[in-house]
Length: 67
Image (cartoon, rainbow, N blue to C red):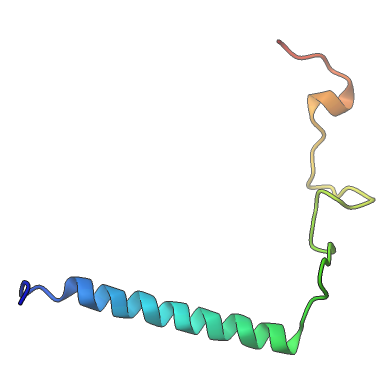
């Protein structure tokens, strides 16, 4: 039943295997170094001191733009 091309079946097995490997990797990472619930330390837009990589927009500088 079905065609003789096994590509779709192989693709499903490969993608499923990648998902299982990534799930195991994230689980091990979480077990080794968990983050507390609601941890905002990795958010760059909510820091007290802005980093050098963040550029101010025209609105922040008081420059009027075109409407």
